[in-house]
Image (cartoon, rainbow, N blue to C red; front, side, top):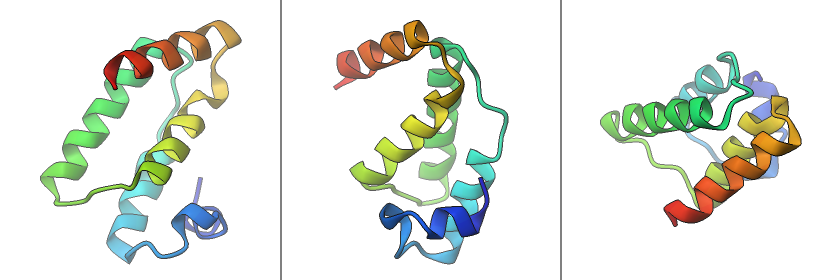
Length: 88
């Protein structure tokens, strides 16, 4: 996913250039089709963002998670949703 695709999404209309670049680089990484691997990737992303003082809104986080789930089987998507519900 590139910056122009992100800018086209209403959730990301008002992102700072730094936040947009950080997000585009993350979403451009290879996606996993495994729920456990996705959660590991998501935690690393979250820690890296926090370390750089970048925070994402709930809408932005939801979009990121949905994007990461695009290559997953229905079973892995369900597993991911279950893990996320448990984390809340």
